[in-house]
Image (cartoon, rainbow, N blue to C red; front, side):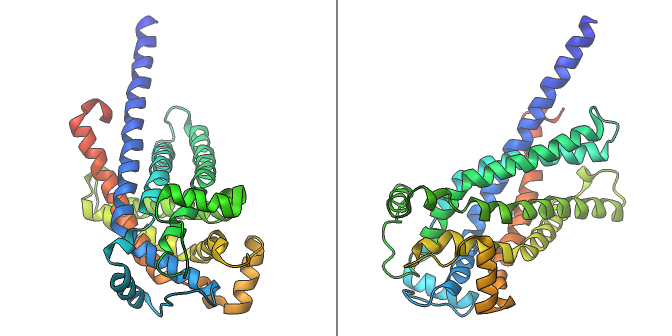
Length: 319
């Protein structure tokens, strides 16, 4: 009995180590992608925001390449990386939790006889959803700061957002608590559907490639298989949630306007459709697709490679 108890305890310890591998790999993979696609994310934010501005714009971009050229000419390389620091702060913890829960859900559904069965998967799904909601709440102030910093160089007389600390002071002074957390609902509104589409699509394409290539295990796939699955997952999730992202961006950045234009998500949908039509909901979809599809490829490929690296460096993590 004592040996059995010791064995069970050992399995739990090993499982905890493997979970740490998943969490750390997910955080590092997300950070890697954020750095690589930061320039495109900045362009996406500016294209989405300019639809709500009729004045005070230093630059109005007609296309992705127009924005790229204008930013580089007027602000240099640094202009593309505004807000990256704030972004990295909040995405790493959220990514760690998301990938940890994703691995547990995927494992149980592929091994239904695993300890806990589908009840464990359901618990992990609830955990992932709860973690994502909490992550959306925590990340909202950082997201607001990131967007304000990204919009510098496009919005006239936009001062006080040169650093993370100065951004916090400026937003708190002008808009108070509402400016930092008042758009949480918009974040959750976009993040929840995106998360579901993102991980589900990746798992589907990964499993499909495993069967098509007649591989015994997903671990036998090459890095380009993960790259393809990640790119497709990112492309599908980004395109289908672009309208939600446009609404989120408009609501979170309207503190820069002389007077708030949108009174919540529902009001934003109505006004965008009335003033810009359906096309308004696709503002910045090209840059967003260009940003998130490669980001998905980089994230999932990096994630799988980080897992293998840590398994090699720390063998107990793979057990």
